[in-house]
Length: 169
Image 1 (cartoon, helix red, strand yellow):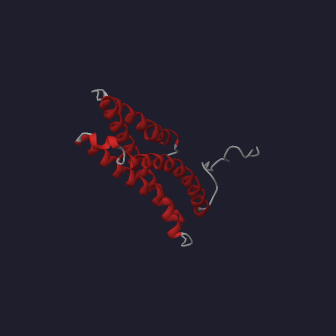
Image 2 (cartoon, one colour):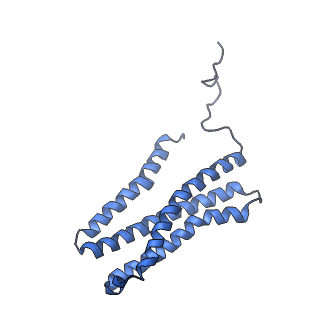
Image 3 (tube, helix red, strand yellow):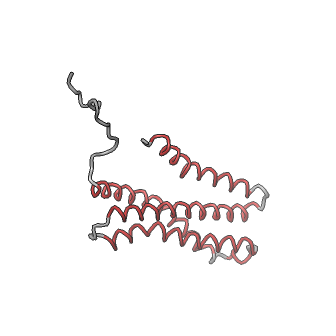
């Protein structure tokens, strides 16, 4: 019986994934990572830009001490989020041509995940501040918690479940 090519021949192990070298894989993963970072960077840049203007608004002075503290924490979170999500670009530029792309991709990936966690915190704090100022209602912490849980599900829960469920052992 001849081997059709779609199934491994007897005694062979079927490989999953692409047939690529470590360098080719690093190149592909880098391209994918940068596309992902662009999406996250756009969100954090808009949010951070908005946050920077709040302190110059007349209403800022009338915020309670608690709301001003939440604002300051949110601005700092926005700043460190920006740093984490721009970090992969700087990393790539500074190590480009040094033959360390696989290692650079790993570090850039870690910075991106950190940036997403920080973006979640920045967004949650922004939402908390806005809803506290807009409503002064006791349901605000519950609403913010619900949104955070939604983000955790969308950004981490489903991806981690998919990775666990569909990754070959």
